Length: 313
View 1 (cartoon, rainbow, N blue to C red):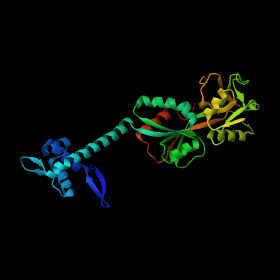
View 2 (view 1 turned 30 degrees about the horizontal axis):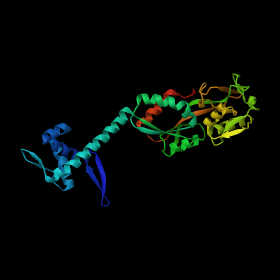
View 3 (view 1 turned 45 degrees about the vertical axis):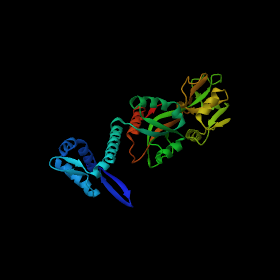
View 4 (view 1 turned 60 degrees about the vertical axis):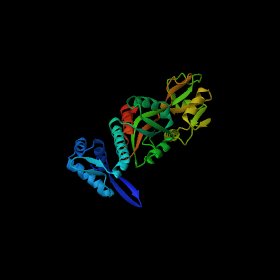
């Protein structure tokens, strides 16, 4: 296969035959056509055609050849360092691409909602690093709406978000259900209950996340369908802020189970919410008709393996 590099000169494109440059370099280094043909695994006739084609294109003689020897012309000697650099750079680039394909090497960007970045994602990243220690992941932690935008606009190859308004140019694969739970200090009257109903929280000082988040929009929608209305004493922008306020004894919070694991904060309880149980669905997002890089594909496969469709957090 002939590889070609395109350059622009004087407003016109030049097509440079890489095979011809490679042939010239190998002949110069080995000192003859016979050895060069053997190294390149082609016939001497094919090798000669490659050199002649390059010289014809350049309009310059690079090699003087007789029946007894091959010698570089003065132009050939001047060109040899640049030709070597071209061959070395191309060989290295192709080698890197082959490694990317074979070993899933490389870097990629992942967009993810903050709740996943707090608990679920670190476990996935540690597992990924075991098989791909040299790969790097650039993480964009953003709202679920922003995660979709990042994947759609190619700012991220993969996204982990919350099921919501679907977009025709995105593929969304369900990973697991993430139920909303009640978070409080162990001094709270509800802290000893095995489960808490929504009506139990009517007198609680609730800390709620902003209605700009997917979690809040989902919760309000699900409760409105059931005629349940809750008002918060405090409103914050981030789930982590809500947890910190709960830990400080400011109030209670309704947050996804994935936000926090029991025991992460001394004195903070995580209690299931029932009547009704409200679950959001965590999804893996990719752009349709877009090929993932090998590094991103490996992470994509790990996520799907770790969380088969329908799994629980």
